[in-house]
Image (cartoon, rainbow, N blue to C red; front, side):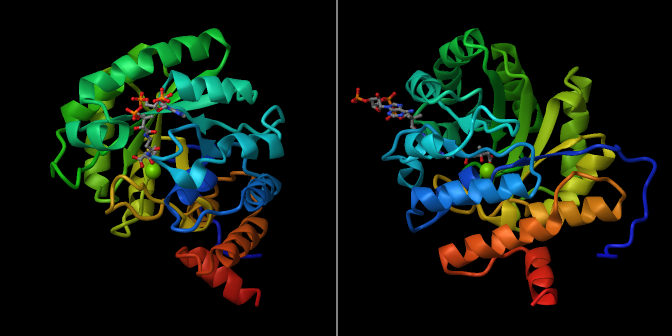
Length: 311
Ligand code: HMG
Ligand code: MG
C-alpha cells in the first residue's frame, strides 16, 4: 500500500512501542460476555499482526468486572511465556496469586489520581490504594515480575472535575516509589487536550520523572486521542497504549469510551516515518473480525476506511 505517504519529521523519536490493551481495556467494557475462545483468538490475531505487547486480561474481583472473570481460563489458552509480552492487570495480592498461578511474567497495577475514582474503582481511598499495592508490588518483584503502574483520571474526573497536575505527579511518584518500572498516564474519560498533555509531561520532567519512564493512555471520548498522542510524541514519549479497533472504556467511569485506536496510531506513525512492526492490513482484519463477534462496526476511522477500500 502506497499510503499514507511518508513525510518524516526529524524532531520525533525513531522508535515507538505500542502497548496493545484491546483484550483488556476493550473487552472489560462490553455489555455481552465474550466467550473465552473468542478472546484467545483475538489475542492470537493481534500477535500475528505484529504487536509485541498485548495486555490480555485482569485478575480483578470477578463480580466487579464479570467480563474478565475468565482470566484464568484465558491464560490457559495463550502463550504467556512466548516472545510476545502479555501483561495482566492486578490490583492486589489475591489477584497476584491468581496471576502467578498461571505463569504471568508482567503485571500492571492501576492507581487513581483522584479520591472519588479510587473509591469507585478500587473500593479504597486515595491513600489506601497504596497500602493495597505495596505488598503486591513487593511480592511481584520478588517473583521476578515486571510491574507497570497506571494512573487514572490524569486529565479530568467525571465527579471531581479538574484534576491538579501536581496531584497527578504526586500519585505517579508514589507509584514509582513502590517499584513500578513504567507509569502509564491515563486520560480515562478522554477529556485531555494537547496543551494539557505538554503541561503534564513538563511537570513530570520538572519532578525528575522523564519521558523515558512514561507511557500515555488516551481514551477517545472527545476525539482528542490522536492529537494528544502527537503532542506527547513531540515531548519525547515513545510508549503509547492503544486498543485494536478503538474498543474500550472503564465500567467504573461511565463517560469513558474507547481507547485510542491502534490502527489510527499506526497510520499516523507510518506517515511520520516511524515504523512499529505492525502489519496494518492484518490488524484491520482482526478488528473487523472482532467487530463481527461483538455485532457492531469498529469506531476506528482507519479500520472503516481500510475495510471499505479492501471490500
Ligand atoms: P473489595 O471488595 O474491597 O475486595 O474489592 P476485598 O479486598 O475487601 O476482598 C473481598 C473479597 O473479594 C475477598 O473474598 C477476596 O478474596 C476477594 P472473601 O474472603 O470475602 O471470600 N477478592 C478477589 N477475588 C478475586 N480476585 C481478586 C480479588 N480481590 C479480592 N483480585 C478490588 C477491591 C480491588 C478487588 C475491587 O475493587 C476490584 O476488583 N476493582 C477492579 C475494578 C476494575 O477492574 N476496573 C477497571 C480497570 S481500571 C481501568 O480500566 C483504567 C485504565 O484503563 C487506565 C485509564 O483508562 O485511566 C487502567
Ligand atoms: Mg483505560
